[in-house]
Image (cartoon, rainbow, N blue to C red):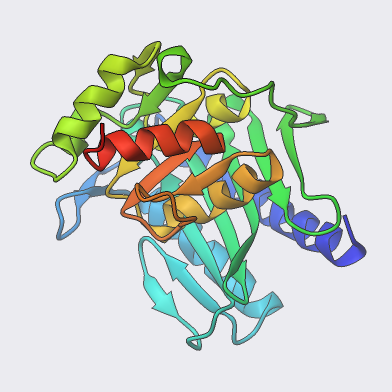
Length: 266
C-alpha cells in the first residue's frame, strides 16, 4: 500500500469511527422514528445525519469531488472520480434492532472502483480495501486487524453456498425463474441481506452473493473488496459492474455459472 493509499484509508476510517457514534446513539433507541421515502423504503434520522456528516467531511478534505449518496443523491462536478455513501445499508434491520446493518463508503477514480469500506458498528467489525500497491483487503474485529485471505473457491454450483437478500426482490422480474433454479441447484441458500451477506462471503463462509435492485452506493465497496480477494462483482452477463441493478459476487467460475442460469441458459 502506497503512502497515499494508506492516508486515504486512515482518513476514511477516522470518519467511520465518528459515524459509529451517531449510528449507535439511535440503534435500538425507543425514540427512533421510521419514515417512508417516495419509493416506500424506510429512512431514519440516523441515515440522514451520517450521510450529512460524511458529505461535509469529503467536501472539506476533497473540495469539488462528486458524491453519490442514498439519501441526498448527487452533488459536485460530473466526472469519473466520485465518492459513494450508503449511511445505513440495511435500514430495515437497523430499525428493528438487528445487528446486520452497516455503513458503506466507496470511491471511484477515473472510472475504476479503488476504495471500499464497510463498517458494522453493532458487531464491532470493519472491512476495508484500497486498490493500489498490493491490492489488499482487511478485516478489523475490535482492535485486531488481519488480512482477508479467502480459501480456494468451489468450482461447481452444486457445491456453492449462496446468499441473497430475500426472494421477494426477485418476484416479477425477468430473472424469477433463473433465481429459483440457482437456489435449488446450490449446496445451501440463505437470505442474509444487505452488506451482512458480503461479510460472510468475505470470511469464506459463503461462495456467492446474488442481488437484484441494488444501486452504486451498495456496490462500489464490494467491487473493491472482490478484486482485492480474488473474487469478482459482475452483472448477470458476466461484465464487471458496480452500478446495479444486477450483482453477482463470487469466484469467476461460480459467477459465470450463476449468470448463465439467471439469463436462462442451460
